[in-house]
Length: 160
Image (cartoon, rainbow, N blue to C red; front, side, top):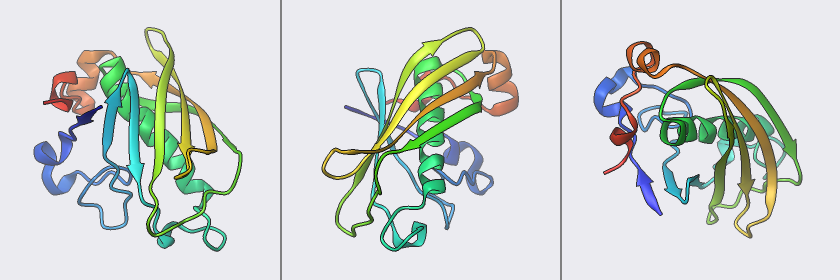
């Protein structure tokens, strides 16, 4: 498994404030990403501030995590930037919040066309049980537009 580096804080400083992955966003998720066999992963410890029902991670936060992991798969697997065009989440079971247990989020690229990519994503509890899954469709920008307008730094910027 290799770590995916976040090149955006270094390039944009305090102006970079993504809710999902910016280390400087005080209310954000602070997700970090890894890749193995073309699957993108993140491990994360839920915090009670993201609670819906008592001791259950809010469904909207889970939807955000499905979207975020897919965006990092766009960067590293599709080698461009994009925006979410569809997000269809299925909640299988409650994702309980425990102070000592990490959850795993993963994304697999299922289909890529010139301007579209479809990912299957999952959030698993510490026991490895799927608590929610999603099909996430991204509109892909042509690489020159991704670089110029959306600051895509190229695939190499994400890996050492």
